[in-house]
Length: 136
Image (cartoon, rainbow, N blue to C red):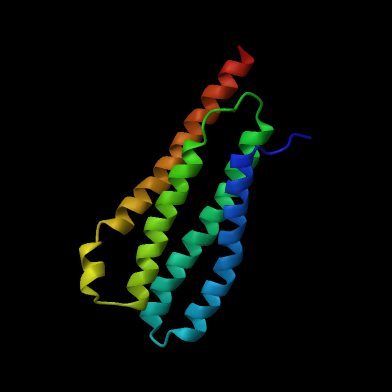
């Protein structure tokens, strides 16, 4: 069985921490926020945080199981940045709706979403390219 290198271990640990933290964050949103609208926004942030954490673990597992995939882990890095921007901004807006500071960061959540999608597209492209080079 293949083992993870140090960067892969870091990303797996980060992904699993996201999943674990999402349980606590979901409980906070459900019991700590009075407004259903804020609970919904918070829930969206937590859901993306959880699933991108699982996705990060999946990326590392696929990378490890696929022979010849030894490039720098850019899709994983992009996924983490995108998740933090998206989930962090949406969560912060749930805690402090109408914040003047957060209004200035209106670009952060959409940019985070684009980065999350870009990370998956980059990963798929890298995976296909590597599988083709292995079969040649």
